[in-house]
Image (cartoon, rainbow, N blue to C red; front, side, top):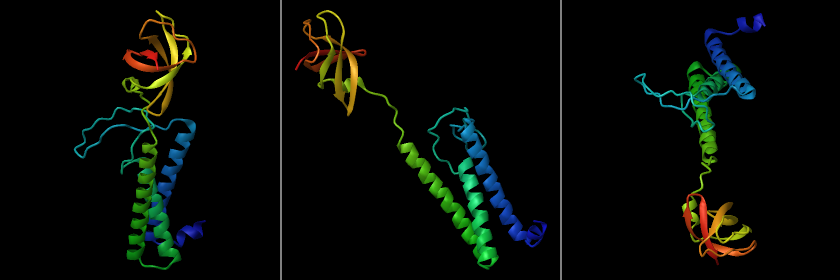
Length: 193
């Protein structure tokens, strides 16, 4: 091991340290994710030092260039590709630095694309009941003349089971197709379709 380190010149040591820093940061991030201590700070950081850091735990952390993932990916790829180009391929320092920077930036770009793709998979899950007006459904639990029953209604490509009352104050038995007339709070007013 000593002979391996002593055979490196200062440029190779610099590249190896960069790769080591990136690898350690990546390993720390991985361990934190596996033990559940992974936190993303959701806030804005500006160059003047002010900003909003509220420590909000959220899986929706959008990719930022100065994230732990971006920094570790850049340093890891910068060091590994630079070392490979310089030591294995026999290229000069200039070409090795250019290749190392390109590899580091490419890895940051790929990480950014992965995070933005993952962010697009997220949905708020909020259903706007107002869009249910005019939709049809089926009575699931009998709607009494003066009480509340349950209906299964499909709207906005979602099927939901909701409380419902009869619009004309007549009982609507299970299995009857109904149409949503209006909504009051979370209760649908329905009539036979």
